[in-house]
Length: 449
Image (cartoon, rainbow, N blue to C red; front, side):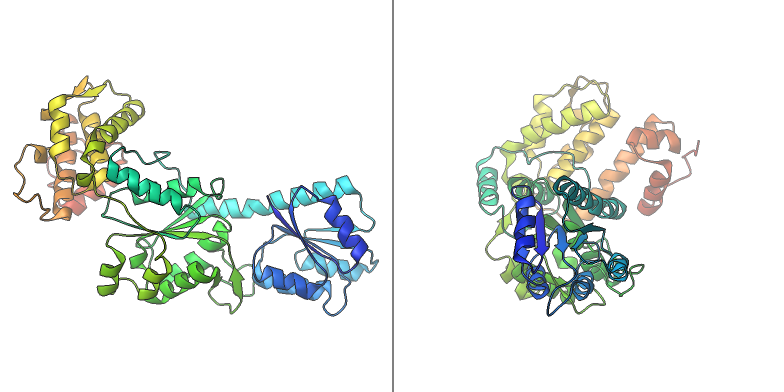
Protein backbone atom coordinates (compact mmCIF):
# COMPACT_ATOMS: atom_id res chain seq x y z
CA UNK A 1 0.00 0.00 0.00
CA UNK A 2 1.32 3.45 -0.91
CA UNK A 3 2.26 5.82 1.92
CA UNK A 4 0.58 9.20 2.33
CA UNK A 5 1.94 11.89 4.70
CA UNK A 6 -0.50 14.61 5.75
CA UNK A 7 1.09 17.76 7.23
CA UNK A 8 -1.73 19.90 8.62
CA UNK A 9 -1.94 21.83 11.91
CA UNK A 10 -5.75 22.16 12.04
CA UNK A 11 -7.35 19.14 13.71
CA UNK A 12 -10.57 19.26 11.68
CA UNK A 13 -8.82 19.50 8.30
CA UNK A 14 -6.29 16.84 9.29
CA UNK A 15 -8.99 14.35 10.28
CA UNK A 16 -11.06 15.16 7.20
CA UNK A 17 -8.05 14.35 5.01
CA UNK A 18 -7.46 11.15 6.95
CA UNK A 19 -11.10 10.16 6.36
CA UNK A 20 -10.85 11.07 2.66
CA UNK A 21 -8.07 8.52 2.11
CA UNK A 22 -9.06 5.91 4.68
CA UNK A 23 -8.33 2.36 3.44
CA UNK A 24 -6.82 3.72 0.22
CA UNK A 25 -3.33 4.47 1.53
CA UNK A 26 -1.13 3.92 4.55
CA UNK A 27 -1.65 7.28 6.26
CA UNK A 28 0.62 9.18 8.63
CA UNK A 29 -0.63 12.56 9.90
CA UNK A 30 1.75 15.21 11.27
CA UNK A 31 0.45 18.15 13.31
CA UNK A 32 3.21 20.49 12.14
CA UNK A 33 6.07 20.76 9.67
CA UNK A 34 8.78 19.70 12.14
CA UNK A 35 6.86 16.52 12.96
CA UNK A 36 6.53 15.86 9.24
CA UNK A 37 10.29 16.28 8.72
CA UNK A 38 10.95 13.93 11.63
CA UNK A 39 8.87 11.28 9.88
CA UNK A 40 10.67 11.83 6.56
CA UNK A 41 14.05 11.48 8.27
CA UNK A 42 13.03 7.90 9.16
CA UNK A 43 11.20 6.81 6.01
CA UNK A 44 9.95 7.99 2.66
CA UNK A 45 6.33 8.74 1.75
CA UNK A 46 4.87 8.31 -1.73
CA UNK A 47 3.04 11.65 -1.58
CA UNK A 48 2.70 14.56 0.85
CA UNK A 49 -0.43 16.66 1.36
CA UNK A 50 0.78 19.95 2.80
CA UNK A 51 -0.89 22.97 4.36
CA UNK A 52 1.11 26.12 3.56
CA UNK A 53 0.19 28.24 6.58
CA UNK A 54 1.35 26.69 9.87
CA UNK A 55 2.96 28.02 13.07
CA UNK A 56 6.68 27.64 13.94
CA UNK A 57 7.69 26.36 10.49
CA UNK A 58 5.62 27.26 7.47
CA UNK A 59 4.79 25.00 4.57
CA UNK A 60 7.21 26.81 2.26
CA UNK A 61 10.21 26.18 4.53
CA UNK A 62 9.06 22.57 4.91
CA UNK A 63 8.89 22.16 1.15
CA UNK A 64 12.47 23.43 0.74
CA UNK A 65 13.68 20.88 3.32
CA UNK A 66 11.79 18.08 1.57
CA UNK A 67 13.53 18.90 -1.70
CA UNK A 68 16.90 18.39 0.00
CA UNK A 69 15.85 14.85 0.87
CA UNK A 70 13.71 13.81 -2.10
CA UNK A 71 13.90 15.85 -5.28
CA UNK A 72 11.07 13.93 -6.91
CA UNK A 73 8.63 13.29 -4.04
CA UNK A 74 5.20 14.65 -5.11
CA UNK A 75 3.71 17.32 -2.82
CA UNK A 76 0.11 18.54 -3.07
CA UNK A 77 -0.63 21.87 -1.43
CA UNK A 78 -4.01 22.17 0.31
CA UNK A 79 -4.73 25.67 1.52
CA UNK A 80 -7.41 28.18 2.37
CA UNK A 81 -5.02 31.08 1.66
CA UNK A 82 -5.82 33.44 -1.21
CA UNK A 83 -2.20 34.59 -1.43
CA UNK A 84 -1.37 33.91 -5.07
CA UNK A 85 2.33 34.78 -4.62
CA UNK A 86 2.63 32.10 -1.94
CA UNK A 87 1.01 29.43 -4.08
CA UNK A 88 3.14 30.39 -7.11
CA UNK A 89 6.29 30.02 -4.98
CA UNK A 90 5.11 26.58 -3.82
CA UNK A 91 4.67 25.47 -7.41
CA UNK A 92 8.11 26.87 -8.26
CA UNK A 93 9.60 24.71 -5.49
CA UNK A 94 8.10 21.61 -7.06
CA UNK A 95 4.61 21.24 -5.63
CA UNK A 96 2.70 19.18 -8.19
CA UNK A 97 -0.71 20.69 -7.55
CA UNK A 98 -2.84 23.06 -5.51
CA UNK A 99 -6.19 22.29 -3.89
CA UNK A 100 -8.34 24.97 -2.23
CA UNK A 101 -10.23 24.28 1.00
CA UNK A 102 -12.89 23.01 1.16
CA UNK A 103 -11.96 20.34 -1.36
CA UNK A 104 -14.03 18.05 -3.55
CA UNK A 105 -13.39 14.50 -2.27
CA UNK A 106 -13.49 12.57 -5.61
CA UNK A 107 -11.40 15.27 -7.27
CA UNK A 108 -8.76 15.20 -4.52
CA UNK A 109 -8.59 11.39 -4.54
CA UNK A 110 -8.14 11.39 -8.29
CA UNK A 111 -5.44 14.06 -8.10
CA UNK A 112 -3.49 12.10 -5.47
CA UNK A 113 -3.71 8.89 -7.49
CA UNK A 114 -2.57 10.59 -10.71
CA UNK A 115 0.27 12.42 -8.93
CA UNK A 116 1.67 9.21 -7.44
CA UNK A 117 1.47 7.46 -10.83
CA UNK A 118 3.15 10.40 -12.59
CA UNK A 119 5.96 10.48 -10.03
CA UNK A 120 6.85 6.88 -10.95
CA UNK A 121 7.52 7.74 -14.61
CA UNK A 122 10.99 9.33 -14.13
CA UNK A 123 12.02 6.42 -11.88
CA UNK A 124 10.96 3.84 -14.47
CA UNK A 125 12.72 5.82 -17.20
CA UNK A 126 15.95 5.89 -15.17
CA UNK A 127 15.69 2.19 -14.35
CA UNK A 128 15.51 1.43 -18.07
CA UNK A 129 18.22 3.91 -19.00
CA UNK A 130 20.67 2.53 -16.43
CA UNK A 131 19.83 -1.07 -17.42
CA UNK A 132 19.88 -2.12 -13.76
CA UNK A 133 16.58 -3.93 -14.02
CA UNK A 134 16.70 -6.77 -16.54
CA UNK A 135 14.80 -9.84 -17.62
CA UNK A 136 16.11 -13.12 -16.28
CA UNK A 137 15.96 -16.45 -18.12
CA UNK A 138 14.31 -18.46 -15.34
CA UNK A 139 11.74 -17.81 -12.64
CA UNK A 140 13.32 -19.91 -9.90
CA UNK A 141 16.42 -21.94 -9.07
CA UNK A 142 16.18 -25.56 -10.24
CA UNK A 143 17.27 -28.51 -8.10
CA UNK A 144 16.09 -31.36 -5.90
CA UNK A 145 19.32 -32.54 -4.25
CA UNK A 146 19.41 -32.51 -0.47
CA UNK A 147 22.17 -29.91 -0.26
CA UNK A 148 20.31 -27.61 -2.65
CA UNK A 149 16.99 -27.99 -0.81
CA UNK A 150 18.65 -27.15 2.53
CA UNK A 151 20.14 -24.03 1.00
CA UNK A 152 16.74 -22.92 -0.33
CA UNK A 153 15.07 -23.54 3.04
CA UNK A 154 17.66 -21.27 4.65
CA UNK A 155 17.05 -18.66 1.93
CA UNK A 156 13.28 -18.69 2.49
CA UNK A 157 13.77 -18.25 6.25
CA UNK A 158 15.73 -15.00 5.74
CA UNK A 159 13.69 -13.63 2.83
CA UNK A 160 13.07 -10.26 4.55
CA UNK A 161 16.68 -9.76 5.72
CA UNK A 162 19.85 -8.38 4.16
CA UNK A 163 21.57 -11.46 2.70
CA UNK A 164 25.12 -12.26 1.61
CA UNK A 165 25.28 -15.08 -0.95
CA UNK A 166 28.62 -16.83 -1.29
CA UNK A 167 29.83 -19.39 -3.80
CA UNK A 168 31.99 -19.99 -6.84
CA UNK A 169 31.48 -18.16 -10.10
CA UNK A 170 28.58 -19.52 -12.10
CA UNK A 171 26.75 -21.36 -9.26
CA UNK A 172 23.62 -19.25 -9.67
CA UNK A 173 23.87 -16.73 -6.83
CA UNK A 174 21.73 -14.22 -8.73
CA UNK A 175 19.03 -16.86 -9.32
CA UNK A 176 18.89 -17.49 -5.57
CA UNK A 177 18.85 -13.75 -4.83
CA UNK A 178 15.90 -13.29 -7.17
CA UNK A 179 14.08 -16.15 -5.47
CA UNK A 180 14.65 -14.48 -2.08
CA UNK A 181 13.23 -11.28 -3.57
CA UNK A 182 10.20 -13.22 -4.87
CA UNK A 183 9.58 -14.71 -1.41
CA UNK A 184 9.69 -11.30 0.27
CA UNK A 185 7.07 -8.56 0.62
CA UNK A 186 9.03 -6.72 -2.09
CA UNK A 187 8.16 -9.30 -4.76
CA UNK A 188 6.18 -6.88 -6.94
CA UNK A 189 8.85 -4.16 -6.83
CA UNK A 190 11.73 -4.03 -9.36
CA UNK A 191 14.85 -6.07 -8.58
CA UNK A 192 17.62 -3.46 -8.91
CA UNK A 193 21.09 -4.80 -9.78
CA UNK A 194 24.57 -3.32 -9.72
CA UNK A 195 27.59 -5.33 -10.88
CA UNK A 196 30.31 -3.83 -8.71
CA UNK A 197 33.12 -5.08 -10.93
CA UNK A 198 31.77 -3.53 -14.14
CA UNK A 199 32.00 0.13 -13.10
CA UNK A 200 35.07 2.34 -12.60
CA UNK A 201 35.65 3.15 -8.92
CA UNK A 202 35.19 6.87 -9.61
CA UNK A 203 31.60 6.30 -10.75
CA UNK A 204 30.53 3.69 -8.20
CA UNK A 205 29.54 6.10 -5.44
CA UNK A 206 27.27 8.13 -7.72
CA UNK A 207 25.81 5.01 -9.36
CA UNK A 208 24.99 3.53 -5.97
CA UNK A 209 23.99 6.54 -3.88
CA UNK A 210 23.21 9.27 -6.39
CA UNK A 211 24.44 12.85 -6.49
CA UNK A 212 23.11 16.09 -5.08
CA UNK A 213 24.56 19.36 -6.37
CA UNK A 214 21.72 21.71 -5.44
CA UNK A 215 20.86 22.19 -9.10
CA UNK A 216 18.09 19.93 -10.36
CA UNK A 217 19.83 19.64 -13.75
CA UNK A 218 22.93 18.10 -12.11
CA UNK A 219 21.20 15.92 -9.52
CA UNK A 220 21.32 12.19 -10.29
CA UNK A 221 19.37 9.28 -8.85
CA UNK A 222 21.48 6.38 -7.64
CA UNK A 223 20.52 2.71 -7.58
CA UNK A 224 19.38 3.00 -3.96
CA UNK A 225 17.10 5.95 -4.87
CA UNK A 226 15.57 3.83 -7.60
CA UNK A 227 15.22 0.74 -5.41
CA UNK A 228 13.21 2.60 -2.73
CA UNK A 229 11.30 -0.15 -0.88
CA UNK A 230 12.64 -2.96 -3.07
CA UNK A 231 15.79 -5.13 -3.19
CA UNK A 232 19.18 -3.77 -4.22
CA UNK A 233 21.43 -6.55 -5.54
CA UNK A 234 25.20 -5.89 -5.34
CA UNK A 235 27.08 -8.47 -7.39
CA UNK A 236 30.69 -9.02 -6.27
CA UNK A 237 30.62 -6.70 -3.27
CA UNK A 238 34.35 -7.34 -2.78
CA UNK A 239 34.98 -5.27 -5.94
CA UNK A 240 33.80 -2.13 -4.12
CA UNK A 241 36.49 0.19 -2.71
CA UNK A 242 36.66 -0.08 1.09
CA UNK A 243 35.39 3.48 1.51
CA UNK A 244 32.19 2.61 -0.37
CA UNK A 245 31.93 -0.69 1.54
CA UNK A 246 31.67 1.43 4.71
CA UNK A 247 28.73 3.28 3.16
CA UNK A 248 27.11 -0.09 2.35
CA UNK A 249 27.53 -1.12 6.01
CA UNK A 250 25.66 2.03 7.04
CA UNK A 251 22.97 1.24 4.48
CA UNK A 252 22.54 -2.33 5.74
CA UNK A 253 22.75 -1.71 9.48
CA UNK A 254 21.07 1.69 9.81
CA UNK A 255 18.91 1.99 6.70
CA UNK A 256 20.39 5.33 5.66
CA UNK A 257 22.82 6.80 3.15
CA UNK A 258 24.27 10.05 1.83
CA UNK A 259 24.39 11.14 -1.78
CA UNK A 260 27.64 12.39 -3.28
CA UNK A 261 27.98 16.12 -2.73
CA UNK A 262 25.41 16.22 0.08
CA UNK A 263 25.56 16.07 3.87
CA UNK A 264 21.87 15.16 4.08
CA UNK A 265 21.16 11.74 5.61
CA UNK A 266 18.48 9.94 3.60
CA UNK A 267 16.46 7.04 5.08
CA UNK A 268 15.57 4.00 3.02
CA UNK A 269 13.65 0.75 3.50
CA UNK A 270 15.46 -0.95 0.61
CA UNK A 271 16.97 -4.35 1.42
CA UNK A 272 20.49 -5.26 0.26
CA UNK A 273 21.38 -8.63 -1.28
CA UNK A 274 25.07 -9.08 -2.09
CA UNK A 275 27.36 -11.77 -3.50
CA UNK A 276 30.90 -12.90 -2.75
CA UNK A 277 32.87 -15.72 -4.38
CA UNK A 278 34.73 -16.71 -1.18
CA UNK A 279 33.41 -17.08 2.36
CA UNK A 280 33.40 -13.86 4.46
CA UNK A 281 36.25 -14.84 6.81
CA UNK A 282 38.53 -15.64 3.85
CA UNK A 283 37.55 -12.39 2.14
CA UNK A 284 38.33 -10.41 5.31
CA UNK A 285 41.70 -12.15 5.70
CA UNK A 286 42.53 -11.35 2.07
CA UNK A 287 41.40 -7.73 2.64
CA UNK A 288 38.79 -8.03 -0.11
CA UNK A 289 36.07 -6.84 2.25
CA UNK A 290 36.25 -4.89 5.50
CA UNK A 291 35.31 -6.78 8.71
CA UNK A 292 32.24 -4.58 9.12
CA UNK A 293 30.75 -6.02 5.90
CA UNK A 294 31.00 -9.55 7.30
CA UNK A 295 29.40 -8.33 10.54
CA UNK A 296 26.56 -6.49 8.75
CA UNK A 297 25.48 -9.66 6.94
CA UNK A 298 26.34 -12.10 9.73
CA UNK A 299 22.71 -13.07 10.40
CA UNK A 300 22.10 -14.25 6.84
CA UNK A 301 25.04 -15.74 4.94
CA UNK A 302 23.97 -18.36 2.39
CA UNK A 303 26.50 -20.62 0.68
CA UNK A 304 25.28 -21.66 -2.78
CA UNK A 305 26.80 -25.12 -3.47
CA UNK A 306 28.90 -25.78 -6.59
CA UNK A 307 27.43 -28.06 -9.25
CA UNK A 308 29.90 -30.89 -8.49
CA UNK A 309 28.32 -31.13 -4.99
CA UNK A 310 24.79 -31.47 -6.39
CA UNK A 311 25.22 -33.94 -9.25
CA UNK A 312 21.66 -35.22 -8.84
CA UNK A 313 20.53 -31.84 -10.18
CA UNK A 314 22.53 -32.08 -13.42
CA UNK A 315 19.84 -34.03 -15.38
CA UNK A 316 17.16 -31.55 -14.27
CA UNK A 317 19.24 -28.54 -15.24
CA UNK A 318 20.41 -30.07 -18.51
CA UNK A 319 16.86 -30.88 -19.63
CA UNK A 320 15.67 -27.44 -18.53
CA UNK A 321 18.29 -25.75 -20.71
CA UNK A 322 17.61 -28.17 -23.57
CA UNK A 323 13.91 -27.26 -23.68
CA UNK A 324 14.69 -23.58 -23.22
CA UNK A 325 17.07 -23.49 -26.20
CA UNK A 326 14.92 -25.86 -28.26
CA UNK A 327 12.27 -23.13 -28.41
CA UNK A 328 14.53 -20.10 -28.69
CA UNK A 329 16.80 -21.67 -31.34
CA UNK A 330 14.01 -23.61 -33.07
CA UNK A 331 15.93 -26.92 -33.07
CA UNK A 332 14.72 -30.53 -33.33
CA UNK A 333 16.61 -31.89 -30.31
CA UNK A 334 14.26 -33.56 -27.81
CA UNK A 335 16.48 -35.48 -25.41
CA UNK A 336 19.98 -36.27 -24.14
CA UNK A 337 21.39 -39.74 -24.79
CA UNK A 338 22.09 -41.73 -21.58
CA UNK A 339 25.81 -41.97 -22.38
CA UNK A 340 25.98 -38.21 -22.92
CA UNK A 341 24.11 -37.60 -19.67
CA UNK A 342 26.60 -39.81 -17.83
CA UNK A 343 29.43 -37.70 -19.19
CA UNK A 344 27.62 -34.58 -17.96
CA UNK A 345 27.22 -36.13 -14.51
CA UNK A 346 30.87 -37.21 -14.31
CA UNK A 347 32.37 -33.88 -15.37
CA UNK A 348 33.82 -31.60 -12.64
CA UNK A 349 32.09 -28.39 -13.91
CA UNK A 350 34.64 -25.70 -13.00
CA UNK A 351 32.21 -23.12 -14.44
CA UNK A 352 29.23 -24.60 -12.55
CA UNK A 353 25.64 -24.06 -13.74
CA UNK A 354 26.66 -21.29 -16.11
CA UNK A 355 29.08 -23.64 -17.87
CA UNK A 356 26.40 -26.35 -18.14
CA UNK A 357 24.02 -23.83 -19.71
CA UNK A 358 26.72 -22.75 -22.19
CA UNK A 359 27.53 -26.37 -23.11
CA UNK A 360 23.88 -27.21 -23.84
CA UNK A 361 23.44 -24.00 -25.84
CA UNK A 362 26.58 -24.66 -27.86
CA UNK A 363 25.51 -28.22 -28.71
CA UNK A 364 22.04 -27.00 -29.71
CA UNK A 365 23.56 -24.33 -31.96
CA UNK A 366 25.92 -26.73 -33.69
CA UNK A 367 23.85 -29.94 -33.73
CA UNK A 368 20.29 -28.71 -33.51
CA UNK A 369 19.10 -31.13 -36.20
CA UNK A 370 19.90 -34.15 -33.99
CA UNK A 371 16.99 -35.75 -32.13
CA UNK A 372 19.27 -36.53 -29.17
CA UNK A 373 22.44 -34.95 -27.81
CA UNK A 374 25.04 -37.66 -28.39
CA UNK A 375 28.34 -38.10 -26.46
CA UNK A 376 30.30 -37.23 -29.59
CA UNK A 377 28.55 -33.83 -29.80
CA UNK A 378 29.82 -32.71 -26.38
CA UNK A 379 32.94 -30.48 -26.24
CA UNK A 380 36.36 -32.11 -26.34
CA UNK A 381 36.98 -31.74 -22.61
CA UNK A 382 34.26 -34.34 -21.97
CA UNK A 383 36.35 -36.93 -23.82
CA UNK A 384 39.63 -36.06 -22.11
CA UNK A 385 40.72 -37.66 -18.82
CA UNK A 386 40.58 -35.30 -15.84
CA UNK A 387 43.26 -34.91 -13.18
CA UNK A 388 43.16 -37.59 -10.50
CA UNK A 389 41.85 -35.21 -7.83
CA UNK A 390 39.37 -33.48 -10.17
CA UNK A 391 41.03 -30.13 -9.50
CA UNK A 392 40.77 -27.14 -11.84
CA UNK A 393 44.16 -26.06 -13.14
CA UNK A 394 43.26 -22.81 -14.92
CA UNK A 395 39.61 -21.77 -15.13
CA UNK A 396 40.20 -18.82 -17.47
CA UNK A 397 42.28 -20.93 -19.84
CA UNK A 398 39.59 -23.63 -19.90
CA UNK A 399 36.87 -21.07 -20.69
CA UNK A 400 38.99 -19.48 -23.43
CA UNK A 401 39.72 -22.89 -24.97
CA UNK A 402 36.01 -23.72 -24.94
CA UNK A 403 35.15 -20.40 -26.60
CA UNK A 404 37.85 -20.89 -29.25
CA UNK A 405 36.47 -24.34 -30.04
CA UNK A 406 32.93 -22.98 -30.31
CA UNK A 407 34.04 -20.24 -32.72
CA UNK A 408 36.14 -22.66 -34.77
CA UNK A 409 33.23 -25.08 -35.21
CA UNK A 410 30.93 -22.23 -36.20
CA UNK A 411 33.42 -21.23 -38.89
CA UNK A 412 33.62 -24.83 -40.09
CA UNK A 413 29.85 -24.76 -40.65
CA UNK A 414 29.91 -21.31 -42.30
CA UNK A 415 32.84 -21.93 -44.68
CA UNK A 416 34.91 -19.33 -42.84
CA UNK A 417 32.43 -16.46 -43.21
CA UNK A 418 32.28 -14.09 -40.22
CA UNK A 419 28.69 -12.96 -40.82
CA UNK A 420 27.33 -16.51 -41.15
CA UNK A 421 29.36 -17.74 -38.16
CA UNK A 422 28.02 -14.88 -36.04
CA UNK A 423 24.48 -15.85 -37.02
CA UNK A 424 25.10 -19.47 -35.98
CA UNK A 425 26.45 -18.30 -32.63
CA UNK A 426 23.59 -15.83 -32.11
CA UNK A 427 25.82 -12.77 -31.76
CA UNK A 428 26.64 -9.76 -33.94
CA UNK A 429 29.52 -9.92 -36.44
CA UNK A 430 31.18 -7.03 -34.59
CA UNK A 431 31.06 -8.89 -31.29
CA UNK A 432 32.41 -12.04 -32.94
CA UNK A 433 35.30 -10.08 -34.45
CA UNK A 434 36.11 -8.62 -31.02
CA UNK A 435 36.21 -12.13 -29.53
CA UNK A 436 38.45 -13.33 -32.39
CA UNK A 437 40.86 -10.47 -31.71
CA UNK A 438 40.80 -10.91 -27.93
CA UNK A 439 41.35 -14.66 -28.11
CA UNK A 440 44.03 -14.18 -30.82
CA UNK A 441 42.40 -16.62 -33.19
CA UNK A 442 44.06 -16.74 -36.61
CA UNK A 443 42.00 -14.53 -38.92
CA UNK A 444 43.46 -15.41 -42.33
CA UNK A 445 40.96 -18.19 -43.23
CA UNK A 446 37.94 -16.04 -42.30
CA UNK A 447 35.84 -14.12 -44.76
CA UNK A 448 33.88 -10.99 -43.78
CA UNK A 449 30.82 -11.57 -45.96
